[in-house]
Image (tube, rainbow, N blue to C red):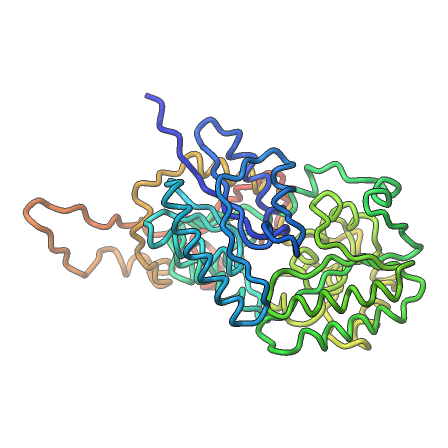
Length: 448
C-alpha cells in the first residue's frame, strides 16, 4: 500500500531566508512522497523591500498563502505589532492549509509568529539552522525559542548540534546536515564579470566591495552611529567601488537605508544600492569583489566557500563559527580601515587559498529532504526534555522513576526515547550522541 503523501508547509519572510530554503523547497516539490505548501510573509510582500515574492514565483513556485504582517514602522512598538499581526494571519493560513508539518528556518520574528501559531495548532515543526548564536541581536532568543517549539532539527555544524541537545532536545531528532547556503554556491551558474555589470547596470572598478550592514537589534540607538563609522571609512577609499544591499526589515533599519542612499547620491560613479540582488546576482557579486564587508551571516556562512575575505563588523554575528577568511573588527572607522589593510596584506591573501568553510561543502538540502521523506510524524508532538545527564550517563537513567497512572482503557503513554550512545571523546561536552554526516560531499573533518 502506498503511504499517503505528506503535506509540508514552508514559510519564508525575507530574501536571504528564501535563498537558503530554495533547494529544500525544490526537493520537496520533486518528491513523490511529499507535497509542498508555501506561505510568503514579511518583507517579501512589501514594495519598500522590493516585493521579493516575485523572485519566488519566477523560480516556478506557487505561493499558497500570503500573510501580510509588516507595518511601515521599525520602532520596537511597530515590530511588536507586526508580530501580533503575523500570529493572526498564520492562524488563518494554517487552519486553511492543514499541513502535516511546518518547516521554518532561522530566527526572525516573522518565523517566530509562524512557529507559535503552529505550536498552538498542534502542527509538528522542523527547524533549520538552530543552535547558532548571534549575541548582538534579538534573533538569539527567537532562535532558541523556536528550537523548543520544534520537533525535528537540522543544524549546520557539530557545535550547533550539541547546543540544540543542550536545550533538552532528543539527540536522535537533531540532524547534522551542514549549511544550506553552500548549495546555492554549487548549484547556480554564476554570471561572469561583463554579464554581472549588465545585470547590475553598474561598472565594477579596480577594487570592489560588497557591503551589507543590518541593525544590531540589542544595542538600542547604536545602528546609525555604527553606519556613520562604516560610511566614513568607505569615504576614504576613493579607488574602490561599493555595492550595497539594503538592510532587513528590522528595528532602526529604515534609518540605515537613508544613510546608504545619501552616500550613493554623493558617489554615483562608484557606489550603488540594491533593495534585493536575488541569489544569482548576489553570489555572482561575491565572486567578483575583493571582500564582503558588514555584519551579514552570509559573510560567515557562504563567502568562505569563495575563498574571499569577510570584514565582520561589530557584535551582530558574535558567537557564530567563523572561517580563517573572516576578520573581526569593532564598528569604528579606524578599526574598519585597519581590517581592510590586513585583508590586502600578502600574508592574509596567501592564506585565503586554504580557507575551509566550517559549514561544510554542500548537500544539506538533499539530505534534509531524504530525512523528511522517511520521518514518521505521528509521535512527534509530545517531547520529553532530554537532560544532559541522561545522555552522558545513560546507565543512571535506565528507567523512568516517575510512576505512570492510566485509566482502565490504558491511554497511550508518552513515547520514551532510547538513550543516546556515549561518544568516545575526552570532553563531556562532546559526549553527546554523534550524528552521521547527512549531507553529501563533506570535506574530511569539516565538523570535527
